Length: 335
Ligand SMILES: [Fe+2]
Ligand SMILES: [Fe+2]
Image 1 (cartoon, rainbow, N blue to C red):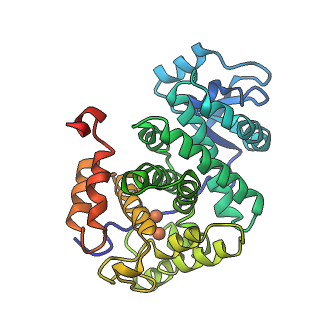
Image 2: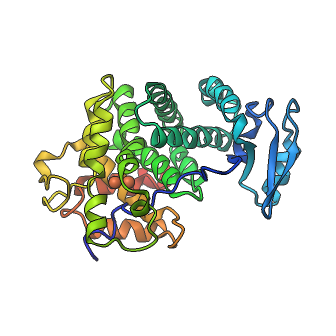
């Protein structure tokens, strides 16, 4: 395989900037955040009200969406602030509530994550967004720590049409799930690692969108531009003085390889922080398994095989078994 074939390197599309509506997950609807907004369904090119504001969302409506195979409904972009402010204020209570089903928690976290990622990429210097991103990763740590397979719910629900969101949530979820299997890690460090994973590709917001959105292989010039995103990312992150150093280190180091053939610095294994190596594996796996507009995602087994072929060259071999174990049933792990 070519050196770059398992890099997350080409696609980074955002929400339609001219669109009037934004998608939210059906699975997160019962949490009360939608009471103050109209909800719409999309039919062809049109949007139709399915729940007017001030009405609660009933279980029957959610079941209908599920039966129809509708993963998302929509809110007006002008209602975005109201919706996400309410969602943010409810998030902690919701994640810790034993009576809320796992899929509903994952749906709400995913919606919040998509919003935060959108804000991060469009205004990466805003301290308010960084504070929301910290809040998000703390809740992800609690959620993923609550159940062996919780991270899979997040990955599954974040299988968003737009690669950036799905990939960023995926890398954060895999990182938060994997790190405690490798080392003793306190909740604060785990949360910092989640934030590092969420922001690892933030430097792509400085690369020409025509390069980012190109549907196909990059030429030499375009590739040279793309290779700058780790340093751009580190620069953006270092402007925020209150972040753990691991966040910038991860942005800068997530395309380095153990044998020194990566970029931007060609660091060898001993110079790549063990925490960064965890995000590297999560990044590659997410890139392989996440849907892109021009290619079919690999299934988990194929993706794991591709990573295994690159152990010692790109990835830390000691991470592989614990990573595979994340996907096994708990009883099989114990066997
Ligand atoms: Fe990535
Ligand atoms: Fe990257």
